Amino acid sequence: MKKMLGAAAMLAGLAVGPAAAETIEVKMLNQNADGDLMVYEPSSVAIQPGDTVHFKAVDQGHNAQSVQGMIPEGADSFRGNINQDFEVTFEQEGTYVYKCLPHLYSGMVGVVKVGDASKNLDQVRGKVSDLPKQARDRLKPLLAAEGS
Image (cartoon, rainbow, N blue to C red; front, side, top):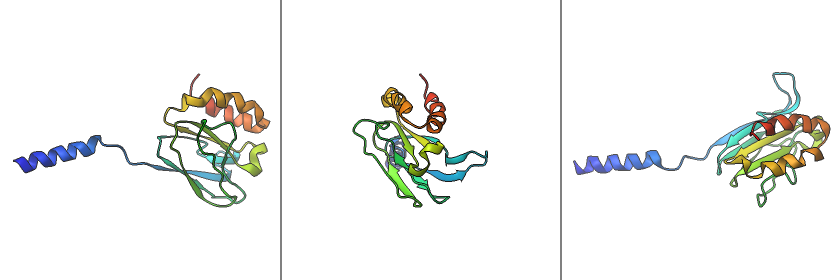
């Protein structure tokens, strides 16, 4: 009987323990199924601290890199090489905006929302006007989805 109770207690502890970190894939595309050009798919992901985003170079000519001033203060910036898959593990909560360097003017931007993404949302929204028009137009609805 003692063994059964011990096993049950151990299983109960596993059920409430921390969740395993996840890896989410974001594809870098010339065109998505809707006909949108120069896009990340999905263009916005919500993850938890410790989760990883795998940027997949499906089409050639793309990268993903953080946009200066549009990530949480103290967070590490990131920059992938063109035509190469790479991964970023996000430890700090907040909103992270990233771009494809060759296609920023075509509006190729995306968002990673980590945990409480509102922590730096006002700061990020304040920097949107610094981006080219097509990037602003694509980014605004992604940031509005966070709420006001």
